[in-house]
Image 1 (cartoon, rainbow, N blue to C red):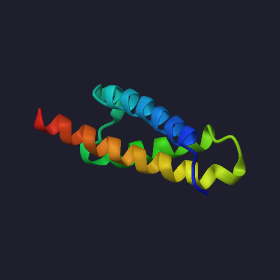
Image 2: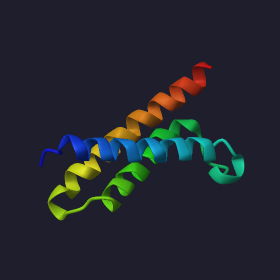
Image 3: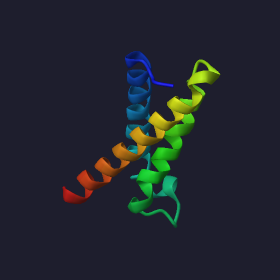
Length: 88
């Protein structure tokens, strides 16, 4: 199912909020654990965004599209954030 522009924007905005929150939290070593590396961050963020998109999905017909867009957005944001952090 194709997402409407409204749904697309809703998920993107939610994923941006999740990304900023996790990026800030993971800078504190007590919240990320001893095995954490920044290379893992994009995939962690993709999983969280996928789950959050699923939670805000209003109906079952759109669930798959919501989850896919959430995962894709989370992965892209995570990759961009890590790249930006490593070049600063």
